Amino acid sequence: MTIIAWLIIAVIIIPLAYFAWSLATIDRKGMVAIHSNLGSGFSNGSGVTIQRPPLMLGIARKLTPGSYEAKLDRWLALAGRPQWIPLTKLIAIKPILAAGGCAAGLLLLAASQSPLAIGLGLFLTVFLYFIPDLLVYNTGLKRQEAIQLEFPNTLDQMLISVEAGLGFEAAMERASTYGGGPLAQELLRTLQDIQVGRPRQEAYTALADRSTVADVRSFVLAVIQADKYGIGIANVLRAQAKQARVKRRQIAEEKAMKLPVKVLFPLLFSIFPVLFIVLLGPAVIKIMHVFTTL
Image (cartoon, rainbow, N blue to C red; front, side, top):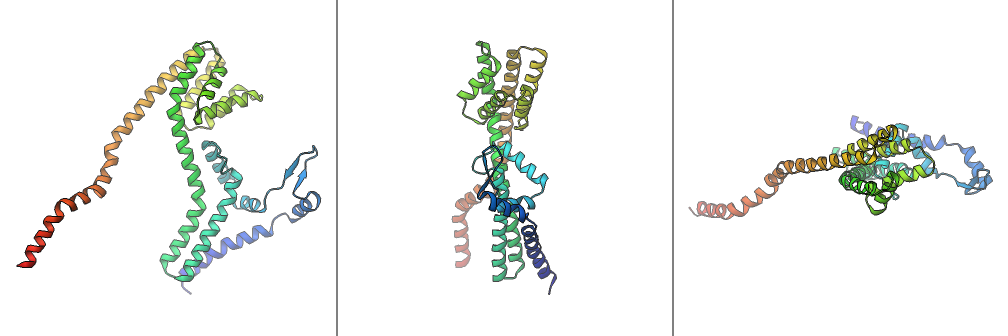
């Protein structure tokens, strides 16, 4: 057998063997105790029934390293923890998609044992395993961009509310009530953390941790310092709002300066060739006709 064939066998057999080993090392006694004593769930002593985790989720958690799971949780936090894909579902669905890609690769390999089929099978396996990560990461990027766009307007609303006589938390509640974007959701979550007894400084720090926008982090740091040293919150909001508006204008100018460079490649590879065909096509046809009639 060739080296490529041995590599194919290793790529297919090793993951399947590890998957079988994961199945074999599951805590069977614990699963049997759960099934026999408590049916579909178990009681924690306070009358609350807790559902047992699915078998596939336990296997997927064994296959997923802890640092990688923490990174996925961080990406979900930046994406606003969408309801359509919680962390448990994300961890469980990745091996299933990878198994589907591996099965498709085996079918391609059975049809044709060419290097192209091998590479395509490996690509499908890896791509389907990481495609949920790409979706979550892309959702987080778009959400952070929306937060950055909404930030100056939200600060202006809070500044108007504070100058009208409301407190800082009341101004946050008003901005989160009348706003419908991701920043309003984050402010509302911060207020909920404070209402359930979390210290204000920790709640504000958690707000900064849930965002990658530098303006939000600067705002949280300024609010914490103002709360610690007794600085007027209206002055802080006014300075932060002015700085955020200037930065938003600078970002817009930067994007406008980059636009000609981004348009250059579509012009060169998409528009110009078609334009040359339309303009020079009839002339080329006439030249060819003249040379063929000589």
